[in-house]
Length: 259
Image 1 (cartoon, helix red, strand yellow):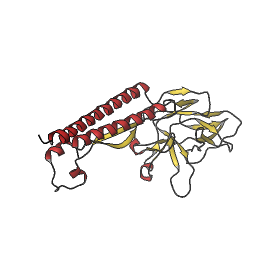
Image 2: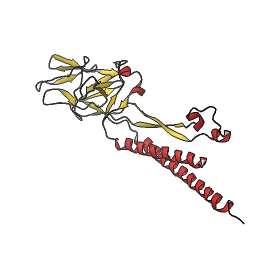
Image 3: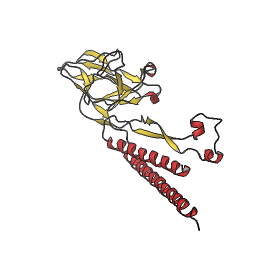
Image 4: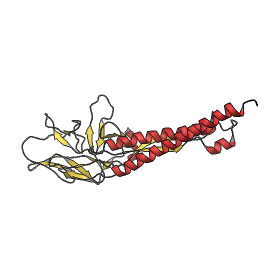
């Protein structure tokens, strides 16, 4: 196999993937609470190292060239988005660190708690405080659903305390995640963790801003520049693949020709 062709192909494939991922980020420019994905690449080890065959005969020069690049697990950029006023007293944006906790449908012992920065909230037909986008019940500090009546103004304090009239109804659970790399996306605006990582959650230091939502933290100018960079990288690697193809054509059809 042509080693140079393989390396160029790996560069083209990773660049095309970056382009698709960035286009997905750009498509969510107006999605409340959206956190953009970051494509991560790493140098691929030579086959002998990758397959754990230290005594296998190999070519030292090719090993120094490396095995090209490959994709690593995506990361998420959790930078703060701009807060936008909505006029809805049930909306609750988070300024600073933290996530709202919600419960998804499910059965058995599977952890059904998810985290979100989407603070668009509403009341469902049962009087539960739910996410406006998915109708998922929002949880308090005791992992209980929050219920409100239709009468009386609702006040949400910066610490998440929910009052209706003079009555304290509940306090929103604002979860702090020590290592955000343990979070993975699980549906629109939702994040999940495994049981071990979830056990390390604590009370976050961020504050609730009533009547606001957090906009997408996608920087459209930066993303457009990154898309252009990925497209140029893909074109450059595809061009190199064409050169390697021409070299192989000449090696087969000219160098081997009998004079």
